[in-house]
Structures are given as C-alpha cells and as structure tokens.
Image (cartoon, rainbow, N blue to C red; front, side, top):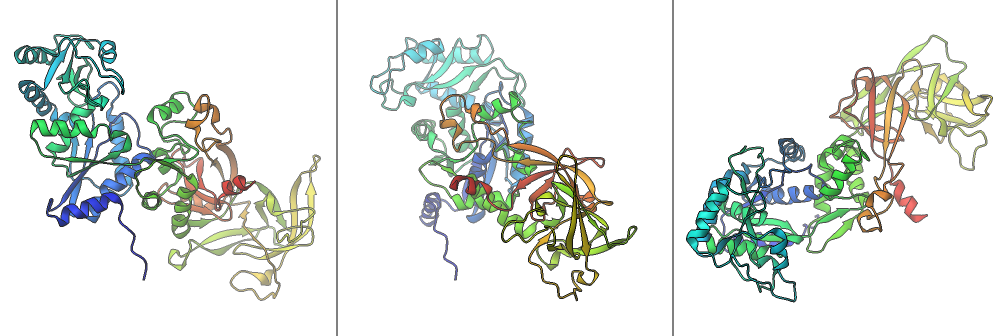
Length: 551
C-alpha cells in the first residue's frame, strides 16, 4: 500500500477550520495583475489555490487586480485566462477589482467618517521623508488633522477630477510611530488620469493594492487568501482595514516563492528580455512564462506534477530546472508519439537493394500497443545520423564502422562495406549491404547485432527546421550575480538546424508531442506552415546538464 502524502501547512489549517465548523466550505482566489504574462511562479500559486478547492468543498475565483490602468491591458487578461485553462483549471467567477470601484470608494468614505482616513496634499517625496525609519518614528503630516467634512469634500473633488496627478492622496490614519512601517498612515487612493481597460474614463482615482486587495477578498467571502511571503508585513494592514470596516473577515496566509534555476521570474526582468530582443516575445520557448513553456512543448500534466512535487513551504529556495524536466520526461515517455528524424544527416546507400524499389515497413507509434502502428517508406538511399558512423571505431562501439553490422530500426540489418569522403576529408556517403532475411518482425537471418540506429528514406524524407532550446542563462541564479543579469544569458540557448524527418510528420499538429527516436522530445511550433515545418526541442532524452555539473 502506498504511503499517503502528508499535508502541507495550509491544508492543515483548512482541515482544522472545517473540523471546527468555522466554514462549511472554503473559497480561494487567484488574483493576478494583468500587466504581463504568467510564469512558473504563478503556476505554483494557480495549482495551490485551485488544487485546494478540488480537494476540499468550495470553489476558486479568478480575480484580476486591475487597479493600475497605466500598465494593464486586455491582452494580458486573455493570456492569463488561456494559461489557467491550459493548466487544467476552471474558476467559478471571473471577477475584477474594478468591479468593486464604487464599493471601495464607499469603504473609503466610511473610513473618513470614522476619522480613520484623511486627504494629504503632500508630495510623494514629502510623505517619504516623514515616514521615519525602522528604528525612528515617523512624523505626522500637517494635513492629518483635517476635519471630516473637509476630507469628504476633498476626496469627492479628487474623484471628480479637479486635481492633477500626484497632488493629493487619501491616507489611512493609523500610527506614524508604528513598528510596522506599512502601518504608518499608508496610502489608500492616488490620482491617475489614465484610461482603464474596463472602466474607461469613469475614474481618475484608483485604490492602492493594499486597500483593494483585502476588501475584494472580503466582498467575495474568501476564506483563505493565499499569497507569497513578501506580503507578511501587509497582513497587519489587511486585518486592520477589515476590522475597521466591519466586513467579512477574510484571512491572509503566506507561502514561500519557488524560484527556478537558470532563469529569472521577475516580470520587470522578463519585460527587459522581451523589449531588448534577447528573446522573441513573451512566448519564446526559452522563457519561464506558461505560454513559453506551452510553446516549447511542456504538458500541463508535467507542470502540475512539478508543482505538486516541490510542494509549498515557509522558506524560499531555488528549485533545480532539472526537476521540472524530470517531471516532463516522465509524462512524455508515456504519451509522446514515436517518430524518426535525422538531425545531422549523412547518406547511407544499400548497394544490393533494388534501385527503384520502395517498401512500407511497420513501426510502432507510441510507447505501447494502444498507440498502434504506422507504415514508413524504405528505399536504397537513406539518411542516418553522422554520429552513428565512426571511421576508426572506439572500444565497445556498436554502431556503424567499416565491416561492422547494425540494425536499422524497424527494418533490416546492414553491414558497412565502404565509405566516401569529399575533398575536405568529410564522410559524405556510407555504402552498406543489407540482409533481406533480417527484416524486423520476421527475422530468420540468425545474425546477432548489438546496435540499432534510426533512419529516414532519402526520397520521401521531408526537410524541417529544428530549434534546439537550452537553458536561457549560464548560471544558476542570474539575479544574484554581480552586474547586469543579462550579462549571463547563454549564447547557445537556441541553435537552429535543418533536419530530415519521416513523411508522417507532414500531418503533425501542435497538440501532439513527439519523441524523435534517440534524439529527444519535440513539438510542432506555431511558426510552421504546410511549406515549412518547424519543430522545437522540448527536452533531451537524458539530463545533459547533470553531466556538465559533474565535470
């Protein structure tokens, strides 16, 4: 019997809450800001929030934190929804912080009426200078003592657009000597005359994240508001606002970010990579964005498995990219279609095979019988991998060499008799004899060989562009290195080659994943057309980086 997986600390809290009758069901939310594409850090949060309400009674909302109209766009909204669905999750309600702008405004009025908020005419620099330090108390703003009526009047005029950006803010009135710097009269609203992607020009004041977030959670009756560790200092303000407004007591819980090695997962840094043309857009297969992973050929199952494997904790760390690749290989090994492709071709001629003859040989489509078989053409002239021939064979070499024999996958045994070089000394043709009675599936030759190589028939082969992707950075944690993180970009993160592939791949689709036998896992890229097929290498068959580290 398999050992039951232990609960993480959030699951322990939820089970205790349900057992105590605090909630009959739970409500979580995934609250991205629509100012960029989701990355693997978000995938952890998605799997956590949606996974909890798959395990326990309840549901998850998708709520866009769209309180900053300057950086947000419907392009990002659409990409976020596509990514979540691709990962295999469905939200109950699609919501926006902007849905609550009227309600949030009224919450602010309530705080003013209670004497817990005031309009401040100070500049951002003046507010910062009065904030104090962790060891020194701050100083009250000269506008802190304004009357309730004056604050109500000014706040309404802010809403009506009478003041320019940056000239006034609404601040909570808490304690300028508080040990938590975020509790020193934090900003609740600022003026921004900017067009909003949903509300248009209706508003020119927008709530700050700390004001919108907890109140949106409360409006939606979120029971467990889960965020990352950097929001621990914000929890006190989260609770203070809910208490003073006397609204549903949502509660915040924090878990540690999981950073991936050999990449960066800061939206700001990812945007730099895109804008500076180090990558070809947000969905470049080298990017840690979910759309980039999808384009590279990662499967949603492998990403969910990865997130489940690393789990959640209260301490941040860097997770080795190789673990993600391991989860991917496990999935693709069981699901990818098997095909033949020659990435570094050299011609093989079977001298005793009829010149005009072509026969269809049968090969397996997948990892087991359920995938069926397909016919692949075989003829006198084939393409094989250059690395499968060695003029002077090394010890224990089981592939082609002068006088050596090898089996051609799903075909015949051949013996190398001769090879031809060009004027530069490069082998351009390998001449072999085949044994007709050694056909795969009906071999009566009694010839024993230790090596099997793949091939494609030269006459029927299709030429394709193959993009070989690797780590985006040369170092494990580029953000921690000296200087500009972009100085550590791996110059070999993309190599483009031209290969010969079997003709069945003319019908390849972007939904399928393919194992190019002995070479790795690949997928069809969106740049493909009927005239030009383009394949991305998703991952190698084995972890080549582990060998590099050992060196």
